[in-house]
Image (cartoon, rainbow, N blue to C red; front, top):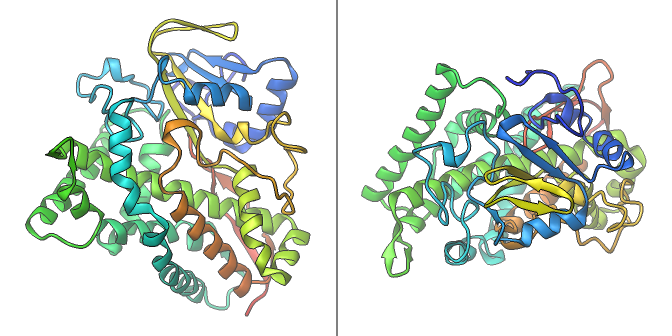
Length: 409
């Protein structure tokens, strides 16, 4: 897919994170930009977008809520100020990730108990069962797609169960995730608009059903929750369900997929983890650092000079946490994937007030998924006859991982 803006002419002055070439060659693009003396790239696309590339700059913007709003966490062709239906700051469309202080802190605090370790740990047995069942379905084939048949299913099924949505609708969720996060530069034709409407109506229907038929799940939890002495507004409930569904799915399946892709490409690391299962949690942290999937966005509140560049009100600013994790000033041998790395204060789960609420869940899913895959397939490699493809947009991960299975248990 090429975006409505056409091919990129210069990654420093005309970049497009919606262009497939961006995620396909992301580390090379970042390295070339920094080597050429460009710590902050810019493009006129999407109405004006900035791309800081160092840990220091990403960190500064992430913590600066005075100059940068979270109202638009995903870059769109239409800015919130141009959209009459946009929910204004400090709430935003998908609270709390779209929320600014002071509203943000209370909206975030509301969700913390639902994603605490004591809520997530009991799900591990379901994760083990699910991962093994997915591998069982692959049968005895020598070639499999670890993304389409494995990584993309795990978080979908877990999140659907947590929300109380039908597990048989998993394919719908995957399509909606790709629509919202992966097609940002595509034309907004009638078919895409109809899919957005279908997604919204689907959630409204299930939220309404939860009103009539309460369950022990996250949607009922949100319907019963109070903020500032009042029940959450319907828009708040809807927006938070959207957030949990979208953010909880693509980020984690991308992290799982990138981890398996690395192990397929690095036989030494794979053998070490097969022979030393206790190393998996440390290796997963390094995979999170090196292949962090998430780039968030902010909106410039008012004209601002920022480290020598002139940012304009309503400009987008991307926060590429993966680039921050590849900064040599922050991590020794930052571009090397070292599963022995012990000091690893990475930013895969974000920086600032919006650090990922679901990090406990994501870590559990990643660790279980990698452990089970290595246990069942101790030896595998990329299939040289097929190509790995990567997502487009602000969440980076392999959309397909063709493998040759060399040994199984």
